[in-house]
Image (tube, rainbow over all chains, first blue to last red; front, top):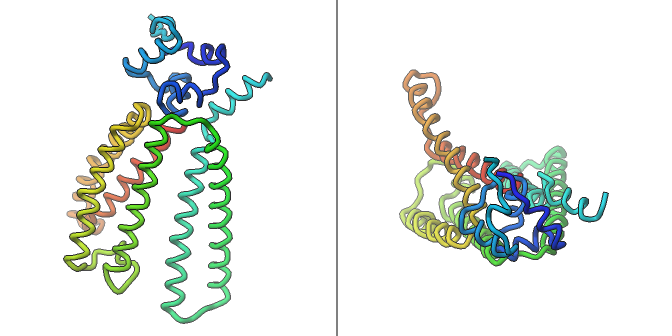
Length: 64
Length: 212
């Protein structure tokens, strides 16, 4: 699944490790989501959306 | 290339520092095991040749190099900010490794007259069996449950995918070996060899899915 996480993170000047701390996941988890290797669960997608103050659909794109 | 781009390239590197630290640490442990086994064999034979000394010296150098490399990489990743779940997960790994090391050392020391009793099917005393089974059948599952509850979903997914792959290896390997043994082509199955192969595949797949 495509996502804008890397761009959103860069806009805030956060490293992957800093975002990981804010989400309470490992840095590898953030990296895997950014590179599309791991699709986050709904609870984690909601945490991301709240953190960036956006809708889930504004962060993730299923290509449909 | 800007600083941000450089940082992103580093962060997305498939073979990152954390994985290198883990692999180098595992290599150092394996070399330590080989060194211990070889030294014990030389002492048992009572015949120290020049080639034995060279091999032991080489193993010590390799172990120190692997350990130093692991430590240097680990120090680098330790400087990163870390989520509470990741820290708890890592602490549980450390606890599990200590428990596993204790179990292995206990079986080697108390299991029988030979140090290789850990890797044999020779009989052991009831006391050693009871303590080992309590650690493995009660302690290890408890640790696994606690780890499962604190670990983030990405690692749980890596663990699950590795487990599924290992399960399929078991499903295909055991009946094939059984048939081949019945045909007289290969020796009878050794459950611990199958267990070890399954665990190795599980661990490699788990690490790969987590870090690559």
